[in-house]
Length: 106
Ligand code: FES
Image 1 (cartoon, rainbow, N blue to C red):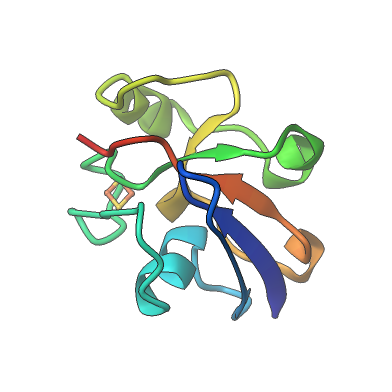
Image 2: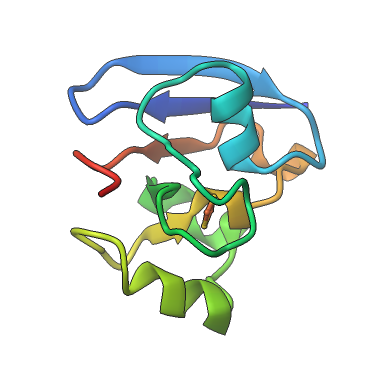
C-alpha cells in the first residue's frame, strides 16, 4: 500500500491508499478521483492519464519509457515532470507520492 495525494488543477487534494501493483492511474480511477480520464484503460495509448509528478518524487517514479515519451507528445502542456500515470506502478517506495493533474486531458 502507498498513500498517494492527487491534486486537481484547482488545488483540490485527494489522499488515498493505493494497492501495490496497481498503477497511479488505477488508484485515481477506482476511487473516482476526477482529472484523470484514462481513455485507453492503461495501455499507454491515449495520453489522457497525464499527471505532473512532484519534483521531490521524480527520482522514485523513474523516467518515461520511449513509448510513453511518444504518447506524451499528444498531451497538452507537457512539462519536464510529466508522466502518464498508467505507466507508474505503485510500490511501497512510493508511499507519500504527490501528483498534480493538468487543467484538461484533451
Ligand atoms: S490510460 Fe491511456 S495512456 Fe495511460
